[in-house]
Image (cartoon, rainbow, N blue to C red):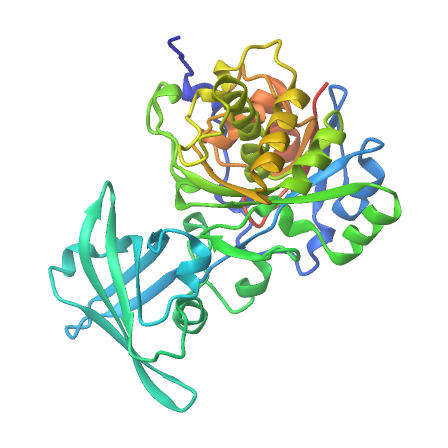
Length: 403
């Protein structure tokens, strides 16, 4: 089926001064817009537990942002920035971060034209020893470079190297260098598993206080892991947004989480668009199992694959198919990847609502918000602009509930 989505229909005027360049001192003191029953109101984020529907199951993305930006200098003084996107060898995050001596990553390279050949190096001190990290381009892949990192201290893992030498990759639209405060404020308080090059920003508003109140009020919570890639910042350049190629992101979901999702299938609210992308990818795995007996988890979920699931297919049945498969195969968690693109006309199969920040004009995230709220997204964003909400990663939040 040919899809046509005019990206210009998803534009709005975002003044530069409305982009939050820095976070508020108190995470949960940000503003919270509420869209419920075609009505818009606002409160403070720490009142979220009072605004959620009864029996809500909140699903969080517990990924952790890595210090993905490494700054090298050539002998000439030219500055070369290497932005680690995802591991090449070893191919999974956990093993790569544990590597000693060398590993390879897919990277974006700033000022690439100045780096013709040869290795770049950084000399640094660790435990009173002088150490050297080198970077060498060994190939290209699409728009990224494959870079081998090697270092001469066998006691240091690559994860530790990034902590020592790397910088936190704050969004490019902030137009500033990262600061020490970003190391904590550009992480959620519940982040656990390293792998993201951008924060799941809807979660930045949560504090231990808010999480405790959610628990006290009887709300359920679950966690998934989706490692956010740099593709989340890619603008839609095609006039027909359906021609935009979505990036691949890797996710992990546990068997016990799937059981909780199945048991609460009518009451799920995602915290952040990354949680939405993971949750709405799950029915595809269930549908694959029903058709072929296996989820084919090594094949990324296609951009339009969720749209091929027949409308009458019960979502709980699809999740239970995954549960049965994992129990039969004695698998505790599934590792998969997704390229799902959620656009207006999409039928949500898992979520009933979303906690999210305010996104860039003409972005895939605006398309996702429109898929959930219809044309009301325009009214929602107009309200936010008229009522001094702060926008983008360090900005304010919203609770959007399906009708």
